[in-house]
Each structure stands twice: as C-alpha cells, then as structure tokens.
Length: 116
Length: 107
Image (cartoon, rainbow over all chains, first blue to last red; front, side):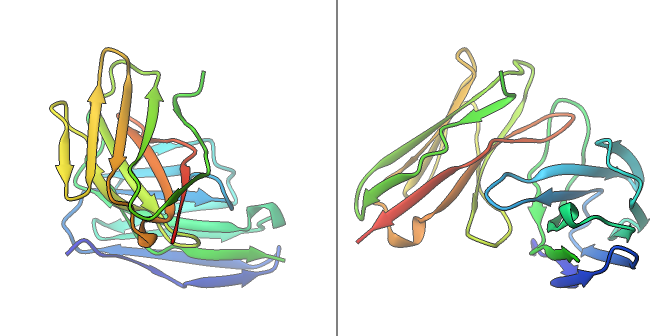
C-alpha cells in the first residue's frame, strides 16, 4: 500500500483565518515532506521531517508552521496567509531521508488552497 | 546553471511514436534519480527509479549517464494516456525537481 492521504481536498480561507492541513501515511515511512506547487511549476520543497524531527526548512515564512505529532501524521498550520500563498499543497513520505541517497517519495493528492 | 534541467517541451507526438526525454543535473555527488509523471491538477506519481545499469518497465526505459550527468526516459509505442508532464527528480540531502516536460500524445 503506497497511499498517502491528505485533508481537506480544497480549502478557501481569508487572510485572517487560521487553518490546518493534515497528512497521513501508514507505510512505516520515517520521512515526511511538505511541498507547495503553483500552476505549471514543479513542486517546491517547504519542510522535511525525518524521524519526527524537522530536518529541513526551506526558509518558509513563519505564517506556515509544520508539526509532526507522530511518525504517521504531518500537519501544516496556516495563519495570516497572503493571496500569493494560493497553491496546491502536497504531502509526501519516503522510507527515510538524509545523506546523498534518497528513497522514492510517495505523494498524497494534495490540498488546493485559495486565500481570499 | 539550474540544479536539474529539462526541456519543457511540449512534445506533440502521434500514438505509437517513440519519444525520449533528457534531463541534466549539476551535482556530481547525486546518488538517486527518478522519473515521475504528473497529470493536470493531480499529484506527482512515481514512474520509475533510475539505476546505474539502466532499467526497463514495459514501454518505459530509463538510463543514467553519470559521466555526462544526465538521465533519460524513453517511451515506446506512445498511448493517449501517456499525455502528462514528466518530472525528472534528483535525490540527495534535498530532493530537486526539474521543471517538467509536457507530453501530448494525439490520435
């Protein structure tokens, strides 16, 4: 089973709202990722968690706050977003992360976020 | 120079054609290479990993040339359902995605 689930599928929020995106995997993977993807662009890495610890933060603004409650779950808390933050937010997981070698990543279907 | 470069296309080919995509990468220490496909408004899906010896999966063949730092994907007997964006991905401490190559297969 290579399934990664994400909720919600769609989210519309105002610039003063607080919301959270959720991601779950049951493959026993120890690395989880958040990506942002704009139309006709490749996914851009935001955060990497390895063994439930934040290992990479790609200089993401603090209005995005990741959380990894356990090895199966990954959240992305959103607060005071801007319209330019509207995008597809993708979660992925892989067996592990780090070093010069990478394992295959499996992506969830994404949350399509619109900030009004 | 970008870390991972791909020809954005689009490639417009008829059904049954053979099409090849190349991708170059800048970090000679990279050890992991992948091809993903992404359909419009969907998530990327792993197509295949790319091994040093090259590998084949049905109509798809991937090759790695470490000396020239490029990987390739060959699709034989193209189907309408192959229409998608193909993403070259280079792994390492951080995973780097190429910008993607768009393929349109027409009847």
